[in-house]
Length: 207
Image 1: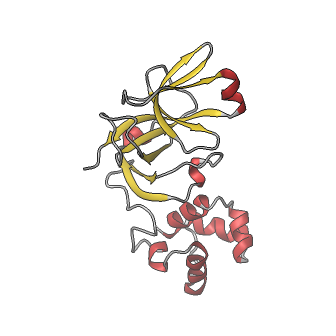
Image 2: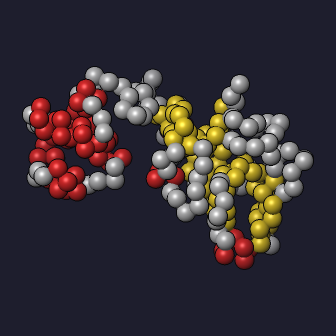
Image 3: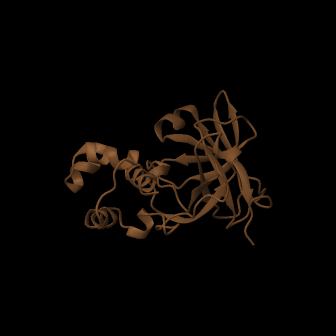
């Protein structure tokens, strides 16, 4: 379990084997041996690794299932994905630290691409999607007309709306008739910019 946890923590931190080895003062080959399972560090080094990643030695050894993160998958192939509250403009989803919770997706869904979950704010997508609900989003940079997407407009948080594309631009349509659709011309899409970052594939209503 140590080799699996080490690799997960290292990759989640965006570090190569060489980069991690350099930071804790060991050779890259040592890290390679650890992740291959052919060697394990002594307890003192294990403590240093745990401190570096902000986890416990028990977590590194597989005795704890959570390290400020999700539990172990309930079935082989399933995956826990982060629930985020906001997506600041220009910030990649994987870099967001505002994690509110985790949701588990099925092995079938996990096999279809990268996903994240977003907590809905506001009433613009009622009655189907309400304030406080969580939507599961598959990362992609385009959607078909009529699909519900997560759209990022520079300077604003991500918005969840139904997509309508036309030759003149992009319209974001709320479900709630009390809210006006938002239209962005092709020039505005480029200049603001306006970008689709994912497609809503599942709603998990919260009561």
